[in-house]
Every structure is written in structure tokens, then in C-alpha cells.
Image (tube, rainbow, N blue to C red):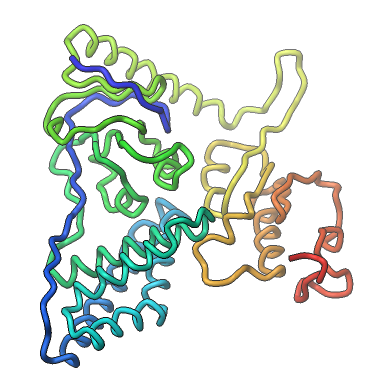
Length: 359
């Protein structure tokens, strides 16, 4: 039995067989083309097919994954944009190379140019650029990007994983995730939490683990490879107890929030978007304590208008029952008043203009 310590991104226990997920690696060959027009058509048709795939992935995942599934729409919008298309077509026309190679070189050049920037929005955009490029290369090379977990539930082990890869996996077959790279605040880790899947990070993974039995302990951040019978029996008991405890806690979600000394309190939830309200309502929170409005700036071509931020806040309040959200990222009391009291809002208008004192 081998034991590895990492970081638990989401608690829980999983026992089962490992499937080592190898990301597709393309051995891209450059060759000269003689018919530029035909090659451009090949690229444009592949681009259209990938946009259709992304739209389909969004429709399949939006009900279950909510806002997390919007990453597919952001990738589709990025692919629809003319700048990326023009850059690839320029390489095809000027260097007279095959379209798959043009996609790869354009991707690599963009990643190299912006790799030192640390802004979350830019890093997310680069991740999306990398993923749509891989989809294009796969489509041009006739390789399917679909991820097959097999017939039985498995523990997925890999070097790193993206939110889109997670959403392409069969949720009924995914018992846990173990990765080498990533952080507990990454998009993939956050998505694992929303999917209630135990996740371990910072484990020095090995492809030779494929097919071996393992135990994932998300509470302690521990991975057991080929556990002995005594350890396995212990974790079977703990997993059952964990399941029963979660079921008992769910029974309390509609009960009033009262302390042992009889004081009634209200438990509020922090959310990053409107789709998080499904979980808020399911678990019985009294309202919204904090709306992470900075998430509204990610994955888009321009900044949201002030009126858009206000409407998002208003929707949060309307749908969150007692919810009270501040579009600038702070919690507010329910008595805290009128729209015009928000900083940056001109009292003479209804959100169509910005206060020039704000950036």
C-alpha cells in the first residue's frame, strides 16, 4: 500500500478503481499547401463544427451546472470573434501552411505573449483560448475530444483538469478527482464542490496507477494506492457514516435556525452568480449575505454597465427572498435603502450613466 498526501479541495470519501486520464497530445506536422482557398474553407468548416459542439455542451450542462456551463458559451463567443479567426487565416495565407498547424502556432504565440500577466480575467481568457484551439486541432485532425470513463464508476487521476473536461465526463461514473496541478480556488476545484465530488490536489500523479484500486480521503487530503484490507474496511465504514451524516444534515435544512439558548438567527449564503441560488434554496439558507460581483467581469469582451450590475443585484434580491446583495461586493442590511445610495450611481438617472469619479 502506498500513501500520498496532498490538499483536499472538497471533502468526502471515494473507494474504487483509478482511471488515469491522458490529455490529448497532438503531434502536429507542418506541410505546405497549394490551394489556400480550399484550406481556408477547411478551417472555417471546422470552426463552425466546434461552435456547434460548444453550444451543444452548454445546452446539455446548463440545467445541472448552471453558470459553470457558461464557460462553453464564453468559448463559443471567443471563437466567433474575428480577431482569433483573422490571426489563423493570416498564417494560412502568408505562410501557406495547413490549417491545424496555423491554429497551433497562433495559439502558442498568444500564450507566449500574455503568459506573464496575472490578472484572473486574462488568465481565464487564455485558458479558454487554449481549449478552443485544442478542439479546433482535434476537429481538423479527426480526433474526438469526448472523454469516456468506461462502464463502471472510477476515480479520475490526471496531471490537471479543466472545467470543460469535468463537464464532459459522465457524472454518474465520476467518483473522485485527483490532480497534480491546481488550487482549491481554481474553477475546476470550485466545480468539483458544486458537483459534490471529492477532490485532491497537489498529488504527484503517475500514469502507472491506471486500473489500480485506490481510496480518496478528501477530509485529510490523503490518497491510498492498493490499500490493504484493514484500511479498506475502515474506510468503507467511514464512507457509510459520512453518507448517513449528510443525509441527516439534509433533514435539518428546513428547520428554523435557533441557537441552544433559544436565540433565532438567520444563516445566509455567499454566491457568485444567479445560478448559485438553486443551491441556496435547496439547502434552506435564509438569504444572500454576499454577492461576488467581480465574477460578472470575467469571460466577457467588455465591462458590464452599471445598470447591468444593478439589475443583477435586483434579480438576486427578487429571487433570493430575503436576500440583500450589494453589487459592489459587500453585504448590506435590508434597511439600507435606495438605489441612489450605492456609490457610483448618479441620483439623477436610473443607472444609465456612470459617476465620473469612478474608474
